[in-house]
Image (spheres, rainbow, N blue to C red):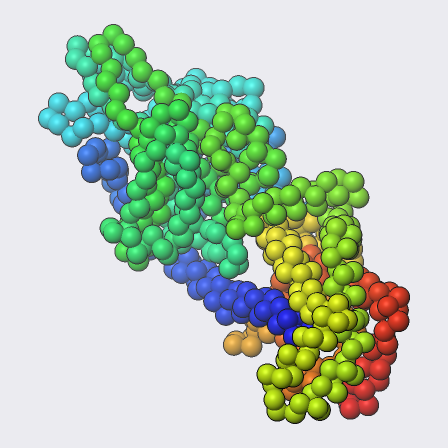
Length: 593
């Protein structure tokens, strides 16, 4: 194995170790911290909601004590029930908010009897999270009376379904009549058509606003490669800001301007988004306010509209509240034309690889009926795609092995004269047509493939709760078994042990991955350099413990890839007539032991 190949493998190893260390020693502890903080926040009196931009005002609702339960919060307002194929919940007639949405097709755990996912919750209950639409006006002495969060809208509808929209109405008693028609599709998109009829004797100037608000820092999924927090597209530019980073902005507010787009808040698998008319200019903000309990808000404000007496004005806003299913987001990108809506999923820097990787896995899943089998099939396909490159690499390694005795002679001949040795070694490479750098190419090419698969397993909801075989019931989660509690015989979770817990996520698949990597290392002679020899000896151990908490689907891929590489390298070595080092290396290892 050439020095360049070794260096590339070491670089890849260090990259993976960094990700693992980040997840375990920063991200995972941060999850526990956030969960504790969330529990504390729910017991603190809620803060006022973030107001509109300085140029306009919407008024503020009085601060109310938070009821203890979600049911009590829901009971504070008359409601219109929501019932579709994908969601259930209700819309509050007080304030006209969409603040009660649960996802019928997703449960909290792999247990089919576990509760369904609750996404949006009312302001006065635990973990408030809701979408709100309304009107703003210039702050003047003759400012019109507008609907607020305390306004009680009227309706004659008994429920919102896919086939039956609902209409809300409110008359301000001063010549303005507000109507709101809300419809919903079979998935997760609400279409809200607001209209204002001016029956007064003077024109009025209004702005439409839409916002998603969330009280308290939500628990994080804890992955370094995953964005959670503020997300949006304004104009043609995608924007991402974490909950913590917004605090570093001036006044904890970040503003944007553009034509069309959308803004919202995203978790690992779920999101809530508001999107105004995609053909009109808008101002957007990501903002945070409050003391011990922060309120996070993503909002948009349209350009002003002046409504003359006897005239009316309309505005259409889309509200997405649901699961980030790839096909669903792509469909909304096409119709109603939400700009770059696929960016609601954090595909990462390798977007051009990650998206096709997902499509390939999804196609194979539909063909094979199991995402685990699809991952195994993708591994074979990747191997076949890079087969010519890999063969050339292994052939180069075989040639390097064949000339090792002659390189050793050069070292003995020139001793400490490294310059002369390097020159003679290069001449030897030229004569034998050996390229020591050719072994790097398969490693370089497959690093983006590996990270793209990692990304797919982390960010796509299609992988959530996807089973393999046996004890693997969720390919996006770590292997649930653990050697330190005798694979479940002892009644404790070693990963919760203080300080050392992250190192103790050692299940069956991490062990299989580590063994396969160790066997692959034995395919090559040990490095002469003692430092490299030590690094390569410990690398399988480091990977085993570092990757123990990775998604089990990724470990299955890595293990299967190692086994295929062992077979491939063995066949090529045999054809090249090069001595097969595997059994000799194993024998030496056990003799030393």
